[in-house]
Length: 437
Image (tube, rainbow, N blue to C red):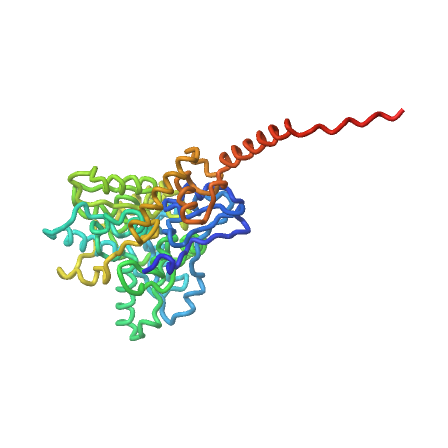
């Protein structure tokens, strides 16, 4: 899959963009530049992490997702609520109220992603027993992290857990069960995921790991929250939940890793922390780790930009819900992991390479270093690039010039002014005009 063919849920509203460099500085793959007073997103580099949405003070970045009217496209609809959804509501001690509200909202059936998460956890535990395992195993649950590794840390691709995320497993199982019970063909059954982040919107359109996603639509948590909050007071608790503590815990950082039941694990959240961990893994600075869980959003999925609640408060709410839940309600029926495995291996996406030809790339790298040495190393961002190194790379790629650096331009103007002053010293003076009597 070529980077330029990606569907992207993160979009830019140029009318709202003020040309500040907040997003430029925060983008983990340096996919954003400011040119002509407006931000520009290099789609091949974008991993849809949503960090630019989180940081933009003018709301110029936004995520695309489906409207609630998508339910009307299908004869039968199944809601796939993310575990993070449970952490958005105050005093929600009974998840059944939330699930009943989803049915009242218009869905015909519920399939909790937390239920699929418990199955993926069980599959992970079985996969971890392989004798040829490359450790540490890196979680494949966060699609933004997968894309980050794919473009920036290709040496770690063999470490990635080759299992589909719970969202995808939930959609496949939900459609199979609904088709069996209703007799409807799968194309008339809509599996609708309720998402905390834009990366999962992208994953539903461009599935990493093979084939077409079984997710038919994605609603944002923040869009359905007001309606669900109003409906929850109008429904009665009915036994609908089929997930336990282990599955609900996937909604916050550390939940997936703890469910692996290995003591030697690491869980990191927030894109900067994720990058730091990946750099250390690449440099082999961690020893004895079995499993690494990485979430691009702070706090895990509860920190996604499509949520409404503060991620750390939402994390506490998830803990309160888990108190009354069994440890786990779902196990694999057999040892066969094939239904959970990727159909295609993850491949390296060389969008950060200077050139596909190694000798040409090395020549460009040398030019880049020379250009960078002529810059000031301030990484101020005034040129529209995140750093002097990035500007040097843009110059080599032919999409910018060194004069974009305001300090270099200042020096050139100063040199020109000095030259004009010296020239003026040698210019003949015009005779003074005689004053009229």
